[in-house]
Amino acid sequence: MRLHITTALSLSALTVLALAGCSTGSTSAVDPGSSTSAPTQREGMHVPASVLLSSAALSQRLLDESDLGEGYTRTPQRPAQHDDVTVIGCPALEDLGSEAAIGDSLDFPHKAKASFTYTGNSSSEVSEELYSDSAAKLSKGIGKVFDAMLSCRSYQVASGSTVVHIRREKMAAPDLGDEQWSQSLSFSSGGQRSVVKQTAIRVGDVLVVVSGAPSLVDTHLKRALGKVERAD
Image 1 (cartoon, rainbow, N blue to C red):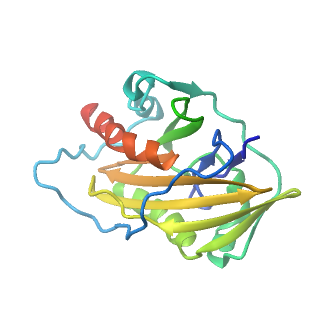
Image 2 (image 1 turned 30 degrees about the horizontal axis):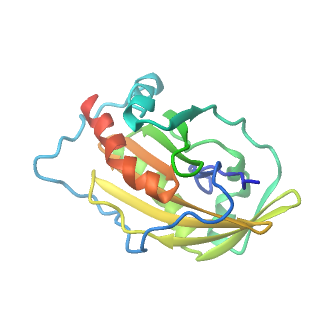
């Protein structure tokens, strides 16, 4: 039996996490550290021009099976969930609005998403989301949600008769792009537990968000960012 949790990350949302395809028991998380959200400029790094990309253009920059390697299968997008969702024990998230938890993505005008199941050592998932908007709007939107989530070490999300216990850890974000955010969330419900890592990198007017099993996020984050930059 697997634990399936889908929540969303938007300007009025909780998170863009999709905890799915994780086997009973936890996936190991990396050591916690400090995330970085201050804009940086890296010598010699290519930064895309300040041109917003359409959703179709973003779709061309998503990772695919050929980028990920053997053992990955693209999973169909799950339909939006419409159950009433209540956030318990985290005022900052409650203030954002619990209906955010039934959405699909950040509320930016241009977006694209792909999710993959990896069946190498165990069945686990990794997903990538791309967004395009002005740098200021991307920074404010993703920063607002991460700040809200990281304001509470633990909280609960209730959907119907299901109550999910969530614990978060602030992670050290890799020194990539112009701004970085990273966190790890542990989900437990009905005796099952899974861990999801989520890292967001803004490079110019594109936001790259990779979520899933911590080891898969660490493996494919640079590859996802590189594909976005090479396509410019």
